[in-house]
Amino acid sequence: MRRQKRDLIETRTKLAKRVRYGQKMQDTNRSPKILANGLKRHAQVSAAKLRDTQTDRLEKASKRLADAEEALRDDAEIRVRLPATAVPAGRTVLTLSALEVRYGARAELIVRGPERIALTGRNGAGKTTLLRTITGEIAPVYGEVRLAVPVRYLPQRLDILDPGLTVVQNVARAAPAATVNQIRAQLARFLFRGPRADQLASTLSGGELFRAALATLLLAQPAPQLLLLDEPTNSLDMASVGQLSGALRSYQGALIVASHDVPFLRGLGITRWLRLDGELTDIDPL
Image 1: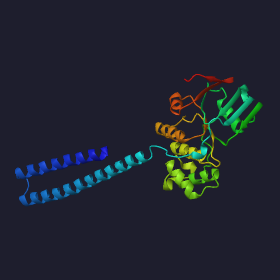
Image 2: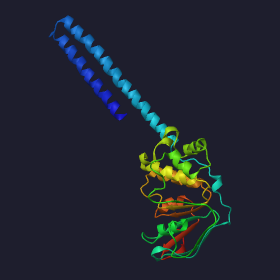
Image 3: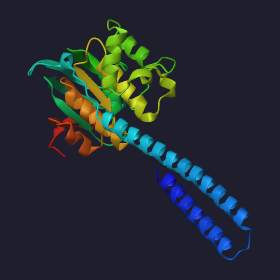
Image 4: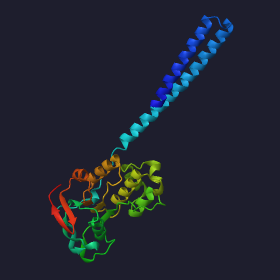
């Protein structure tokens, strides 16, 4: 838009110079009158064409700008209802009994109801290992993990999608009982509308990949009533962080988020703060 405005100004400046030059030639009788009039008419026609071209380009740029602004307004927030993720208050969701995971970290924990837990600790303390042990990806060294509800895990790498499948197909794998129309309707709330939902996962941008992974988790069947997130804001731009926060505000299940991003954690309405440093302990809010 700025470039087209600048080009239009430059065009007007050039045309004004041509007009002044033609008038000067005519005033000083340096060219025959019939030739001067012909040059003047030619200049007027050329000027009109050039001005129309630049004006048309400016109008098109203005429309593209308006369309982009409208798209941003439409895509500003993930809007999704997730009633199936709800967990009654007081219901036991997760129990870790005398748990020891790889690299020596130990944990005793009971999660009840829709608790929102922040899992903090230095890098290398074992937060990722603990989350993967809860999901069953890694066997515990000692102790027991008891899950009472469906669980889903979003790793840092966002590698839960099949790159050879479209966004719709990836969600369909996680929700086999849902129809394609139902999946598309839900994906629209994750900002995948129309042909965007038919993109291959391998072609998605960073923000799109994040939204597709989040949709695959939250729309899975059975609905996850415990969600584990591992450093979810790493490598996300501000818009994607805002979208994640909006989606998690709609989530009604229990939540455990491993993160160093304190402002993000506070925005989620964390109800319990834990720190892993050899052992898992409750701490005061940061």
